[in-house]
Length: 161
Image 1 (tube, one colour):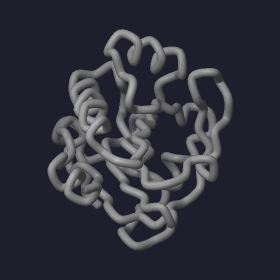
Image 2: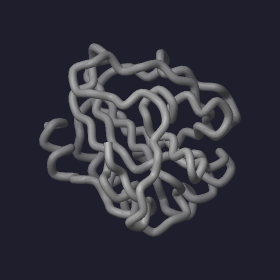
Image 3: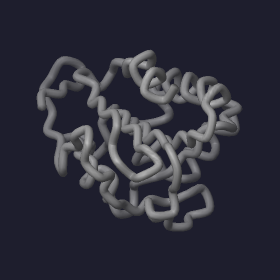
């Protein structure tokens, strides 16, 4: 997989996900510093992996998913980054994010490793989107070829409709 950051190749560590496989497990941290296991996340869901909420592209992306989430029936959207939970909560409050749940991979890095999104050179997660169905099967995968560009929203929304 060839992914670039600002035009330069980067190394994504971990297992690269394919459509059709079971979604791997992981542990992340919520805004109250509680560990959340992926086994607690049920139903149809979207995992939005971003480098940092404090960047312009990530800001636009999460705002777009927040808006789209209001139109999705029985779908939960989770944004996962290496940002500390405090920074995530501050950003969500300032941005008025209410329909997307932010989770942090800073502690265990298990999401990054198990979904192949951990950028070795930067210590951040790459921009990627995964749609998981009610049976925990991966039905959509997008690793953005350029980390500084947004994902293909229309393709993701088509899978969710």
